[in-house]
Length: 107
Length: 240
Image (tube, rainbow over all chains, first blue to last red):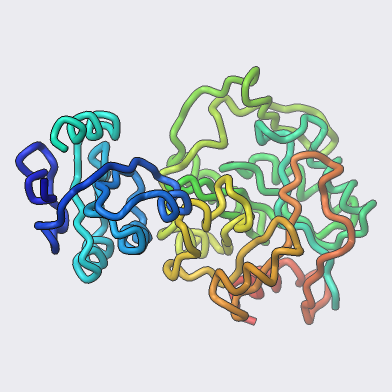
Protein backbone atom coordinates (compact mmCIF):
# COMPACT_ATOMS: atom_id res chain seq x y z
CA UNK A 1 0.00 0.00 0.00
CA UNK A 2 1.08 3.60 -0.53
CA UNK A 3 1.48 6.38 1.99
CA UNK A 4 -1.50 8.18 0.49
CA UNK A 5 -3.72 5.14 1.20
CA UNK A 6 -3.07 5.74 4.91
CA UNK A 7 -5.18 8.89 4.83
CA UNK A 8 -8.26 6.68 4.28
CA UNK A 9 -7.61 4.96 7.62
CA UNK A 10 -7.46 7.79 10.16
CA UNK A 11 -3.93 9.02 9.46
CA UNK A 12 -3.91 12.80 8.95
CA UNK A 13 -1.40 14.10 6.38
CA UNK A 14 0.91 16.87 7.68
CA UNK A 15 3.34 16.79 4.73
CA UNK A 16 2.97 14.47 1.75
CA UNK A 17 5.57 15.42 -0.87
CA UNK A 18 5.83 11.79 -2.06
CA UNK A 19 2.35 10.27 -1.63
CA UNK A 20 3.07 7.30 -3.91
CA UNK A 21 5.83 5.81 -1.73
CA UNK A 22 5.13 2.12 -1.06
CA UNK A 23 5.07 1.00 2.60
CA UNK A 24 6.82 -2.32 3.09
CA UNK A 25 7.25 -2.51 6.88
CA UNK A 26 6.96 -0.73 10.22
CA UNK A 27 9.49 0.54 12.75
CA UNK A 28 8.68 2.09 16.13
CA UNK A 29 11.18 4.19 18.09
CA UNK A 30 11.82 7.63 19.57
CA UNK A 31 15.56 7.57 20.19
CA UNK A 32 16.86 8.88 16.87
CA UNK A 33 20.34 7.38 17.24
CA UNK A 34 18.63 3.95 17.32
CA UNK A 35 16.21 4.70 14.50
CA UNK A 36 19.09 5.76 12.23
CA UNK A 37 20.68 2.33 12.52
CA UNK A 38 17.57 0.15 12.63
CA UNK A 39 14.68 1.49 10.54
CA UNK A 40 14.63 -0.04 7.05
CA UNK A 41 14.01 1.55 3.70
CA UNK A 42 10.26 1.58 2.99
CA UNK A 43 9.23 1.38 6.66
CA UNK A 44 6.42 3.45 8.13
CA UNK A 45 8.26 4.88 11.16
CA UNK A 46 6.02 5.51 14.17
CA UNK A 47 7.33 7.94 16.78
CA UNK A 48 6.32 10.66 19.25
CA UNK A 49 9.50 12.68 18.56
CA UNK A 50 8.69 15.93 16.76
CA UNK A 51 12.11 17.62 16.75
CA UNK A 52 13.29 18.80 13.34
CA UNK A 53 15.94 16.06 13.27
CA UNK A 54 13.19 13.52 12.43
CA UNK A 55 13.32 14.85 8.85
CA UNK A 56 17.07 14.19 8.63
CA UNK A 57 16.78 10.73 10.19
CA UNK A 58 13.82 9.78 7.96
CA UNK A 59 15.83 10.85 4.92
CA UNK A 60 18.91 8.92 6.05
CA UNK A 61 16.95 5.73 6.78
CA UNK A 62 14.88 6.21 3.61
CA UNK A 63 11.62 5.37 5.39
CA UNK A 64 8.37 5.64 3.42
CA UNK A 65 6.83 7.98 5.96
CA UNK A 66 6.91 9.23 9.56
CA UNK A 67 3.79 8.69 11.65
CA UNK A 68 3.49 10.94 14.71
CA UNK A 69 1.47 9.00 17.27
CA UNK A 70 -0.56 10.37 20.19
CA UNK A 71 -1.61 13.40 18.12
CA UNK A 72 1.81 15.03 18.60
CA UNK A 73 1.91 18.41 16.88
CA UNK A 74 4.54 19.59 14.43
CA UNK A 75 6.10 23.04 14.15
CA UNK A 76 6.06 24.84 10.80
CA UNK A 77 9.84 24.50 10.48
CA UNK A 78 9.61 20.71 10.55
CA UNK A 79 6.85 20.67 7.93
CA UNK A 80 8.97 22.89 5.69
CA UNK A 81 12.03 20.67 6.15
CA UNK A 82 9.95 17.57 5.40
CA UNK A 83 8.56 19.06 2.19
CA UNK A 84 12.00 20.15 1.00
CA UNK A 85 13.59 16.75 1.78
CA UNK A 86 10.71 14.74 0.29
CA UNK A 87 9.69 13.25 3.66
CA UNK A 88 6.08 12.18 4.19
CA UNK A 89 4.72 12.91 7.67
CA UNK A 90 1.30 11.93 9.01
CA UNK A 91 -0.33 12.32 12.38
CA UNK A 92 -2.29 9.67 14.30
CA UNK A 93 -4.46 10.45 17.33
CA UNK A 94 -4.08 7.14 19.17
CA UNK A 95 -0.95 5.39 20.51
CA UNK A 96 1.99 3.87 18.64
CA UNK A 97 0.61 0.44 19.51
CA UNK A 98 -2.80 1.26 17.99
CA UNK A 99 -1.10 2.62 14.86
CA UNK A 100 1.02 -0.53 14.55
CA UNK A 101 -2.00 -2.82 15.00
CA UNK A 102 -3.87 -0.93 12.30
CA UNK A 103 -0.88 -1.07 9.94
CA UNK A 104 -0.42 -4.76 10.62
CA UNK A 105 -3.90 -5.39 9.25
CA UNK A 106 -3.33 -3.18 6.21
CA UNK A 107 0.09 -4.40 5.04
CA UNK B 1 43.67 33.49 35.74
CA UNK B 2 42.88 29.79 35.86
CA UNK B 3 39.60 28.76 37.44
CA UNK B 4 39.19 25.07 38.22
CA UNK B 5 35.55 24.13 37.83
CA UNK B 6 32.79 21.59 38.17
CA UNK B 7 29.57 22.98 36.74
CA UNK B 8 27.20 20.02 36.99
CA UNK B 9 26.60 18.61 40.47
CA UNK B 10 23.50 17.04 42.06
CA UNK B 11 22.51 17.34 45.70
CA UNK B 12 20.22 15.29 47.93
CA UNK B 13 17.29 17.10 46.30
CA UNK B 14 17.72 15.06 43.11
CA UNK B 15 16.08 11.67 43.74
CA UNK B 16 19.12 9.92 42.27
CA UNK B 17 21.50 12.09 44.33
CA UNK B 18 22.99 10.65 47.52
CA UNK B 19 21.30 11.81 50.74
CA UNK B 20 24.77 12.75 52.04
CA UNK B 21 25.26 15.21 49.16
CA UNK B 22 24.02 18.22 51.11
CA UNK B 23 24.80 21.71 49.79
CA UNK B 24 27.35 22.25 52.57
CA UNK B 25 29.07 18.91 51.98
CA UNK B 26 29.26 19.55 48.23
CA UNK B 27 30.93 22.93 48.78
CA UNK B 28 33.23 21.38 51.39
CA UNK B 29 34.26 18.63 48.98
CA UNK B 30 34.98 21.24 46.32
CA UNK B 31 37.23 23.10 48.75
CA UNK B 32 39.08 19.88 49.60
CA UNK B 33 39.50 19.11 45.89
CA UNK B 34 40.90 22.56 45.18
CA UNK B 35 38.07 23.76 42.95
CA UNK B 36 37.37 27.47 42.37
CA UNK B 37 33.90 27.49 40.74
CA UNK B 38 31.07 25.03 41.33
CA UNK B 39 27.47 24.87 40.13
CA UNK B 40 24.61 23.09 41.86
CA UNK B 41 22.32 21.63 39.17
CA UNK B 42 19.58 19.37 40.49
CA UNK B 43 16.99 17.93 38.13
CA UNK B 44 14.42 20.63 37.21
CA UNK B 45 14.84 22.53 40.49
CA UNK B 46 17.09 25.13 42.11
CA UNK B 47 15.61 24.84 45.59
CA UNK B 48 18.89 23.81 47.24
CA UNK B 49 20.77 26.71 45.64
CA UNK B 50 20.13 29.27 48.42
CA UNK B 51 21.83 26.92 50.90
CA UNK B 52 24.58 26.13 48.40
CA UNK B 53 25.39 29.82 47.83
CA UNK B 54 25.74 30.43 51.59
CA UNK B 55 27.81 27.28 52.13
CA UNK B 56 30.03 27.97 49.11
CA UNK B 57 30.98 31.40 50.37
CA UNK B 58 32.06 29.85 53.69
CA UNK B 59 34.20 27.31 51.85
CA UNK B 60 35.83 29.84 49.52
CA UNK B 61 34.02 28.49 46.44
CA UNK B 62 32.52 30.74 43.74
CA UNK B 63 28.93 29.44 43.39
CA UNK B 64 26.66 29.22 40.39
CA UNK B 65 23.04 28.16 40.65
CA UNK B 66 20.66 26.55 38.25
CA UNK B 67 19.40 23.15 37.29
CA UNK B 68 19.70 20.25 34.90
CA UNK B 69 16.56 20.76 32.83
CA UNK B 70 14.85 17.77 31.22
CA UNK B 71 13.41 18.98 27.92
CA UNK B 72 10.19 17.64 26.41
CA UNK B 73 12.38 15.36 24.25
CA UNK B 74 13.99 13.88 27.41
CA UNK B 75 17.28 15.67 26.66
CA UNK B 76 19.27 16.94 29.64
CA UNK B 77 20.36 20.59 29.45
CA UNK B 78 22.43 22.28 32.17
CA UNK B 79 21.12 25.79 32.96
CA UNK B 80 23.43 28.14 34.89
CA UNK B 81 22.97 31.53 36.56
CA UNK B 82 25.55 33.66 38.34
CA UNK B 83 22.90 35.43 40.42
CA UNK B 84 20.94 33.37 42.93
CA UNK B 85 17.78 35.43 42.48
CA UNK B 86 17.78 34.71 38.74
CA UNK B 87 18.20 30.99 39.38
CA UNK B 88 15.26 31.06 41.79
CA UNK B 89 13.08 33.01 39.39
CA UNK B 90 13.85 30.43 36.71
CA UNK B 91 13.03 27.72 39.26
CA UNK B 92 9.58 29.25 39.83
CA UNK B 93 8.98 29.46 36.10
CA UNK B 94 10.02 25.84 35.47
CA UNK B 95 7.80 24.81 38.39
CA UNK B 96 4.87 25.77 36.17
CA UNK B 97 6.15 23.69 33.26
CA UNK B 98 6.83 20.44 35.07
CA UNK B 99 4.59 17.43 34.62
CA UNK B 100 3.54 16.55 38.15
CA UNK B 101 3.79 12.91 39.14
CA UNK B 102 4.05 12.00 42.84
CA UNK B 103 7.57 10.84 43.74
CA UNK B 104 7.91 7.27 44.97
CA UNK B 105 10.91 7.65 47.26
CA UNK B 106 11.13 3.87 47.65
CA UNK B 107 11.80 3.60 43.91
CA UNK B 108 13.42 6.89 42.87
CA UNK B 109 14.96 8.12 46.15
CA UNK B 110 14.47 11.04 48.53
CA UNK B 111 14.19 14.66 47.35
CA UNK B 112 15.51 16.64 50.32
CA UNK B 113 15.67 20.42 50.69
CA UNK B 114 18.34 21.61 53.15
CA UNK B 115 19.71 24.73 54.79
CA UNK B 116 23.41 25.52 54.64
CA UNK B 117 24.23 23.58 57.81
CA UNK B 118 22.82 20.20 56.77
CA UNK B 119 19.41 20.56 58.40
CA UNK B 120 16.60 19.11 56.30
CA UNK B 121 14.00 21.84 55.93
CA UNK B 122 11.61 20.19 53.51
CA UNK B 123 11.19 17.82 50.61
CA UNK B 124 9.83 17.95 47.08
CA UNK B 125 6.61 15.98 46.72
CA UNK B 126 6.60 15.44 42.94
CA UNK B 127 9.21 13.53 40.94
CA UNK B 128 11.87 15.93 39.66
CA UNK B 129 13.55 13.92 36.91
CA UNK B 130 10.77 13.51 34.35
CA UNK B 131 10.42 15.65 31.22
CA UNK B 132 9.15 19.24 31.39
CA UNK B 133 7.13 20.87 28.61
CA UNK B 134 10.16 23.01 27.60
CA UNK B 135 11.45 21.96 24.18
CA UNK B 136 15.14 21.91 23.28
CA UNK B 137 14.39 24.55 20.66
CA UNK B 138 13.15 27.11 23.15
CA UNK B 139 15.67 26.39 25.94
CA UNK B 140 18.62 28.68 25.00
CA UNK B 141 16.55 31.85 24.54
CA UNK B 142 14.41 31.05 27.57
CA UNK B 143 17.40 30.62 29.89
CA UNK B 144 19.05 33.73 28.47
CA UNK B 145 15.88 35.74 29.16
CA UNK B 146 16.32 34.85 32.85
CA UNK B 147 19.97 36.00 32.77
CA UNK B 148 21.66 32.61 32.40
CA UNK B 149 23.16 30.25 29.86
CA UNK B 150 22.48 26.62 29.02
CA UNK B 151 24.26 23.76 27.27
CA UNK B 152 23.46 20.13 26.43
CA UNK B 153 24.66 17.82 29.21
CA UNK B 154 26.83 14.70 28.82
CA UNK B 155 26.60 14.57 25.03
CA UNK B 156 28.86 11.50 25.12
CA UNK B 157 26.28 9.43 27.04
CA UNK B 158 23.41 7.29 25.73
CA UNK B 159 20.88 8.17 28.41
CA UNK B 160 19.37 11.64 27.91
CA UNK B 161 22.31 12.90 25.84
CA UNK B 162 21.37 15.15 22.92
CA UNK B 163 23.17 13.04 20.30
CA UNK B 164 21.61 9.79 21.52
CA UNK B 165 18.11 11.30 21.48
CA UNK B 166 18.35 13.34 18.27
CA UNK B 167 20.81 11.19 16.33
CA UNK B 168 23.18 14.07 15.60
CA UNK B 169 24.06 17.33 17.35
CA UNK B 170 21.32 19.73 16.17
CA UNK B 171 22.20 22.75 14.01
CA UNK B 172 19.43 24.69 15.68
CA UNK B 173 18.99 25.96 18.31
CA UNK B 174 22.55 27.26 18.53
CA UNK B 175 24.46 26.16 21.61
CA UNK B 176 27.74 27.97 22.22
CA UNK B 177 29.02 25.20 24.48
CA UNK B 178 28.36 21.59 25.38
CA UNK B 179 29.36 19.16 28.11
CA UNK B 180 31.17 15.87 27.94
CA UNK B 181 31.13 13.46 30.83
CA UNK B 182 34.46 11.86 30.03
CA UNK B 183 37.20 14.46 29.28
CA UNK B 184 38.89 11.94 26.95
CA UNK B 185 35.87 12.28 24.63
CA UNK B 186 36.31 16.04 24.14
CA UNK B 187 38.24 15.84 20.85
CA UNK B 188 35.88 13.36 19.22
CA UNK B 189 32.76 15.25 20.24
CA UNK B 190 34.14 18.69 19.34
CA UNK B 191 33.92 17.51 15.72
CA UNK B 192 30.43 16.00 16.11
CA UNK B 193 28.89 19.11 17.63
CA UNK B 194 30.10 21.62 15.12
CA UNK B 195 33.85 21.92 15.29
CA UNK B 196 36.32 24.06 17.12
CA UNK B 197 33.98 27.01 17.74
CA UNK B 198 32.10 25.05 20.36
CA UNK B 199 33.34 25.35 23.93
CA UNK B 200 33.39 21.93 25.55
CA UNK B 201 33.19 21.54 29.31
CA UNK B 202 34.14 18.45 31.29
CA UNK B 203 31.91 18.27 34.36
CA UNK B 204 31.33 15.47 36.85
CA UNK B 205 27.51 15.18 36.92
CA UNK B 206 28.25 14.04 40.48
CA UNK B 207 25.47 12.20 42.31
CA UNK B 208 27.82 11.25 45.19
CA UNK B 209 30.36 13.43 46.99
CA UNK B 210 33.24 11.29 45.76
CA UNK B 211 32.24 11.90 42.11
CA UNK B 212 32.95 15.64 42.39
CA UNK B 213 35.85 16.67 40.16
CA UNK B 214 39.40 16.98 41.34
CA UNK B 215 41.46 20.02 40.40
CA UNK B 216 41.80 19.07 36.72
CA UNK B 217 39.63 20.96 34.22
CA UNK B 218 39.99 24.73 34.21
CA UNK B 219 38.89 27.80 32.29
CA UNK B 220 41.02 30.89 31.71
CA UNK B 221 39.09 34.02 32.70
CA UNK B 222 40.71 37.42 32.63
CA UNK B 223 39.19 38.74 35.87
CA UNK B 224 39.35 38.75 39.66
CA UNK B 225 37.44 36.17 41.69
CA UNK B 226 34.62 38.60 42.50
CA UNK B 227 33.74 38.88 38.83
CA UNK B 228 34.42 35.30 37.80
CA UNK B 229 30.83 34.00 37.98
CA UNK B 230 29.48 36.74 35.72
CA UNK B 231 32.42 36.41 33.35
CA UNK B 232 31.93 32.66 33.19
CA UNK B 233 28.32 33.10 32.03
CA UNK B 234 29.57 35.49 29.32
CA UNK B 235 32.30 33.05 28.33
CA UNK B 236 29.81 30.19 28.01
CA UNK B 237 27.53 32.38 25.89
CA UNK B 238 30.49 33.03 23.60
CA UNK B 239 30.39 36.75 24.36
CA UNK B 240 34.04 36.89 25.49
